[in-house]
Image 1 (cartoon, rainbow, N blue to C red):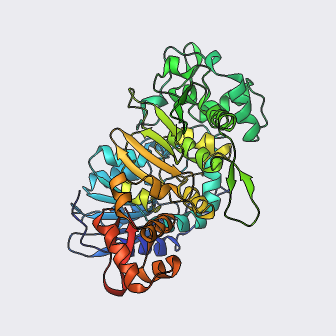
Image 2 (cartoon, helix red, strand yellow):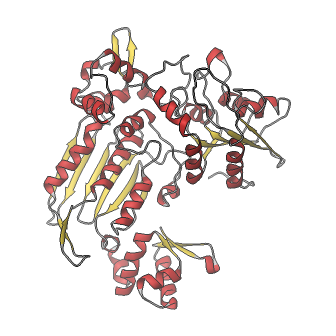
Image 3 (cartoon, rainbow, N blue to C red):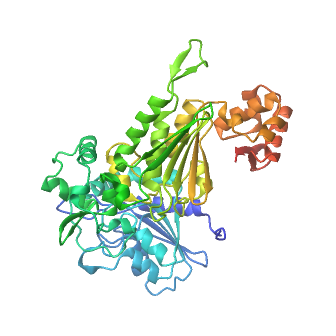
Length: 496
């Protein structure tokens, strides 16, 4: 782990957003929306300088103004840069202008904190990848600040997303994020599933007919087809999303699913379909296999679905979108038991996102595979730029279920969803469960649905006095179930 920075990162993020609001729009005849961008430079001696887009000249990027106009003759080795928008990447600018990412690299800046990814098709994580490949440490702004930046740049973001399917790139991109961007040498456009393409067209409300020149041009601009000497050829992303038999070209594609029934039997199914068809097929399969259950939490008994399907769908889609497809020996997996739904996705959290950020549902927005994310978002099956973790958290609370749990079991990122309120205690190790009194089990069950609590809140919710509440919570700490954060009256107990 890198040393904790000496500066107040949160304050400098907030300062960058304050500066962002001073951005000056460039007068343009085409009416193209421009981003509002703020940048803050923290120097090794503790001095701080700022710049916003268009501050000294119309159209100048904030990073250019800060590095070239304000610090051209200043040694910036070891400085840290905070910028509200991802720096532009090599190949993204017209007339062979140097990219902001390259200027940052040449300035020998050691860390860059990025507000949000630039959704413009000429950038879209390429600036971040360029910096990372040149040894620059990358961090993302806190999620709430990212949402503020998105809100204030809504017009620019909507225009950038639209350009994914309407604007040709002005120059070739120099930064390749993934081998899946390349054309698959053994694939042909006829290997794409008409059913999958039609579902995309329908749900994304695309007017052009599947197979038309306009529709294929759309897929080309989205990086799902490439024009080769032999004609249009699917890229790796195109095959994963729409291929009739994606595993014949990409063996790591698809989803392996298993249901473990209470009687000890199990049933397995391999979903070797185009990725856009998998979520619906999983839901149909599970609904046919699992009976509804009885909800006795209200005065009138009622049948409810055996799984929180919207949570399962979100988790499956996230696994397909955000997995590391460079790990060829592993596949996404779904395992259902009487108490839990476990989704295993190859690859750890995408740096700089941490497991702790995921588990506290505060992970910043960042996409490993933007091409796939964009398609699922257009089909309204994924959040546009996020990880869906807020949906998982909020829906679990609504259903009074224990909060989802993230873990890393190399090489898998493991997400566990709980099927019923009792699952939190039923999934404890037998010796741990046996060590808990009935009131402690009830307390743990409540705490698992909250994620964290102060002792007074716990006492009221569980119906015990303050002393008993502290005894329960400290026992959970000793058992490794929770950890203390802060101290004194601010002490909070957070589920591990």
